[in-house]
Length: 314
Image (cartoon, rainbow, N blue to C red; front, top):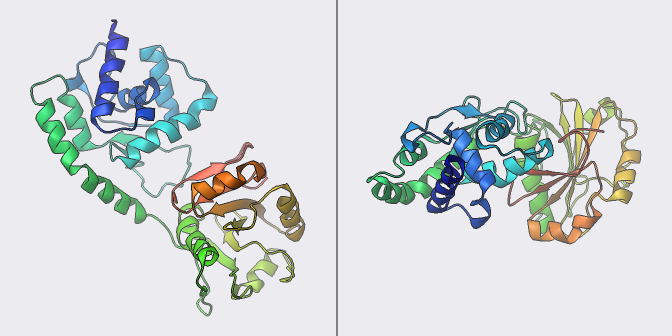
């Protein structure tokens, strides 16, 4: 077995010991870990080091040192199927240099977590088993700690002081509330809430004046989206359909919304929100291209349907 194969085999063993799911015990995820710690095939584990690195440099590292070349269009696979799991497990940190960097920024970087690095440096030594047991016993606490830290960098939506929004009870109302309190602060930070529909009262919250300033004069008897958010920084209107029983932003709905907002002076972004992935899967084939999907029980992620942009108008 040559140095490359040996190192990959050992790394996959480390991933297994760290409790990564079987789907991540593969060459791609092993290479991500090796890139994070900048460890070459001929180096010993004690030489592992910390650095900040983005997805493209990780892929370049794979090619240069481990002779594994991946196509540019697999960047998302690296991000979603390897690095995301590292973040969730507290193995790596996301944007430690600038935690409030916008989601999906091209400057996004990852760094090995300090305690994980110390553990990895002990691999193939007499201390490995003892340190591994200690590490695993602390993991859940650390994951919660990092999750709490990421929460601090959400920026709430702005609502006019003289206005307030309330919701009736029910699954649909809860999802609208989640869009305002979870989706908005993450993906439209500092945005201004213009409209929040509710199954109980369609006109409960509506900043009509701001919408008119943006060039849109809406008939509330028309088919309004469930939530409208203005993103001043990007000059976008984000239209969100909250799906619990009725359909998503499909081709027909996409055209309806285009017609409703045709007077807009700013770009339009279309988002479908689901409470969970099980319901999303029911409507998956109906979702229109060039739209986004957000799932409330996985709030820090977006699913992008085609196109050259990620969360942006067309």
